[in-house]
Every structure is written in C-alpha cells, then in structure tokens.
Amino acid sequence: MTKLRFGEMSLSGFADELGSDAATPGGGSASALAGALAASLVAMVARTTATGKAFADRAEEMNEITGEADRLRDELLGLVDEDATSFDQVMAAFRLPKETPEQQAARSEEIQKGYQAAVHPPMLVCRGAVRLLELALQIAERGKPNAVSDAGVAALLAATSLEGAALNVRINLSSITDTAFHTAQSEALGELLAQGQALRAEALAAVSTKLS
Image (cartoon, rainbow, N blue to C red):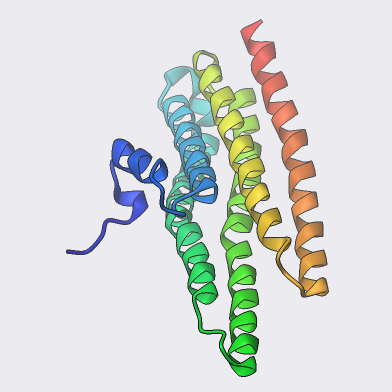
C-alpha cells in the first residue's frame, strides 16, 4: 500500500507522525505547514473581503491576493514532504559503507551533497513565508476590519514558518564544508530574516491599530 504523503494526512495523523520517534517529519516540515496555514488564512480574509459589498472597489486586489495565497499554500504543503525527503537522503548517505578509503571518500561526498540538497526546501519555505508576510500586511491594512485578527494570526504563522525554516537551513549549513555555498546561503538567509522581521512588525502594528 502506498504511504500517504504528509500533506495528504489528517491533522491528527500528521501530529502523530510528528510526535513519533522517527527523524522525519521534523521541525522543517512543521515550519512548512505553519506557512501553509498562514496562506490559508490570507486567502480566507482576501476572499471574504472580495465578496463584501462594502469592499467592491477592492475586489480585484483581493482576488489577486487569493490566487497567490492559494498557490503558496499548495507549494508549502508540497514542501512539508520535500523537507522530510531531503533529510531522509542525508541519513541514507550516512548509512553508506566506509570500510575502504574509496568508500569513505564516496560516502563523505554523498553526505555533503545531501546536506546541500537539504538546504533547498527550507530556503523555499523562507521565501514563501516572506511573501506571505507581505500579503498579511496588505490584508491587515486593506481587508475587512472584522477579519483583522485573522490577518494577524496569518502574520504570526508566516513569521514562525520563516524563523523555523531558517533554523533548519542553519543546522544543515553547519555541516557543509563548501565555503562559497555556505556564505551565499547564509547571506541570502540573513536578508530574508531581516525582511521578515520588518514585515511582521508592520503587519502586527496595522492589526493593533484596527483593534484599538
């Protein structure tokens, strides 16, 4: 029987898998899921604003947000699995034979390839989370006022997705010996975190203003 993808599981089923003694899914997959939930909330606020008669002048803007949020949700749900799969490949590399110098060299090379590949999914999660923070700010400012708390939760979930995925990037980078790769990814990650922190503050300030 084909095993269910994590993104296809029920919430309780995924929570059971996450809480098991298996190495995957782990924090990277959970971070991707947090982003997917943020995307769903962004889409919900945008949809309900677009259909409100009082916000007819914002319908086109909100429909565009809805389409992008739906796309990001699907992408992030896919990354729930991709993150787990990439780390499984690292673990498989560690299980390669290492009796001879040739085997040891081949094993080390595969481990390094695995770690570099494992950086890719959480970096994509970080990029998606930053875009979701931009959209959360937009709906906090332009969405219907009685859904502003949902916009705030979307911003918080997106920020958690970003910071959680960043931890997974960093732990994989710590095992990579390619200095150029390490430096490039670290710099890109730093820029994303700076953007995300600023957007989180802006979005929550917009939410607070409407709630006061």
